[in-house]
Length: 239
Ligand code: PEP
Image (spheres, rainbow, N blue to C red):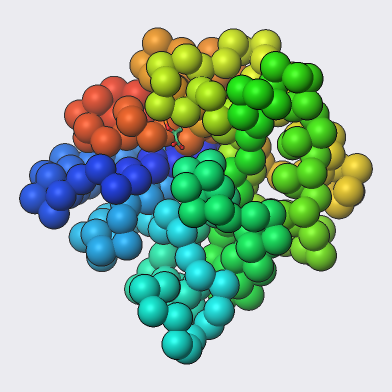
């Protein structure tokens, strides 16, 4: 069964770097990987191969109107975007995104036939005080409040423990497995439906094989920024 790999390019590349990146990545095709590349808004149209899907890293929940600096789901759909990352921990912490804002963004995407990659995850303090389960449950229930079960097929949950992102310290296979199973159980209990759940947080060539064994795929930040290195990682997942 194919594994999902989301490349979160964040705000890391210049236009010239993206030109190089695209010329390298467009030559590759991975039969067993559903690759979703998420560049900065301004680079989206440079990603033009059928070998992957293109996602955005954010969206605003209104459709059109006086919202200076924002981009809507309708506008993203018009230019061929099929996925949006919503609720990344960088947006929750730096831009104060709440579960209620995240819920509005999810609805806007689903209304415009865009699939959602919903990021959830506890921070270090919450983990140390044994609050992980409560935090994950609250994030899921509030973000997905009012969403129809039939829409769960259009949502990928990315479990991304905050203390693991960009630190080089991925969770162990056992920790990932138990938290992914827990997330799936909440979805099953609340929606009587399945949902793809992937892991993100310092995935690299060394740990990828173990991690994909216990989840539906991975979300990759740093390691996706260098096309040649990312291709090596994708080849491991593809096996
Ligand atoms: C991320 O920011 O979503 C992420 C997974 O980052 P990294 O792979 O660098 O930990």
